[in-house]
Length: 315
Image 1 (cartoon, helix red, strand yellow):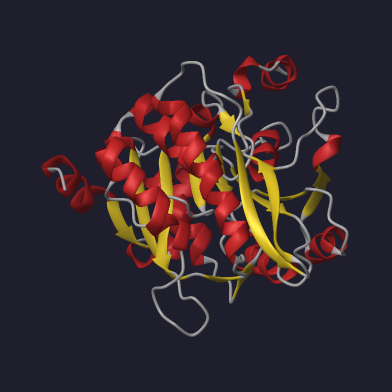
Image 2 (cartoon, rainbow, N blue to C red):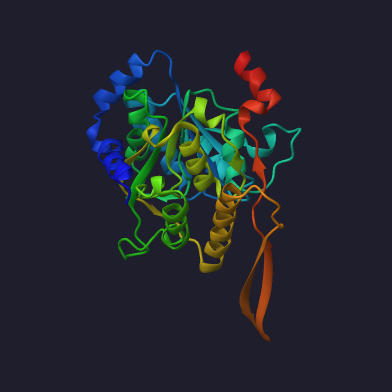
């Protein structure tokens, strides 16, 4: 590990317990209108989204008034995700209702990008909607450094990721794909414990300057681009404990890995690249059957280049 990264780890890695609710309340009051918007991208998460929303409302909107806005962006759920989230106290917006002149494409990054248009906070906090045993520390922990240190612009959550009952075996794509890529090509980011984690808080002034990969590559893309835009010392991470969530099967992980690799490839070379695909196999009645999937390659431009966003911010 680079000496610069070792120094960064001592300066920019914290625990959620380092900032008490009273500290955070005082920091929020002193921020003079720096609102905090929490965004949950959700697709068929009716089983978990309600508990997450209810916890954030109770602990961070009613008890300490840390969060100003709580929005669930529904990606087209076919279950009761929207109803459950609304009943628990979130404002629910359908992905397709945001920037309708530009047809939406499937993907988590697409939803996060569009969320900038329907939120108002100067700090945006993204939380995955499939978390189980959710703690408010996931939000307060990563928002805290942005409220207390004006030099910090991007904060990732770090945590243990069990796989079922086995500790430390979650995050398979991180260990097999993302971490090697970052260590080889962006060694300044080697200190991030969970580079692909879906829980992070960012200043709007930075987010609106970054392109968003529309699919699974969004977390790696934002992290790499943030490094190049504001430098390592503006990035940080906070330990929030343990993350328990629904795990993907092996083939879904393969598609995720391909998208992440492609996101890295685009950032390593802006030359002429063929449109990639990934072929996977499933056993059928007559043997293995190939299934070929396109790899997410599309990216949305920095939000400040969108006319509707500029007009909304100017209003």
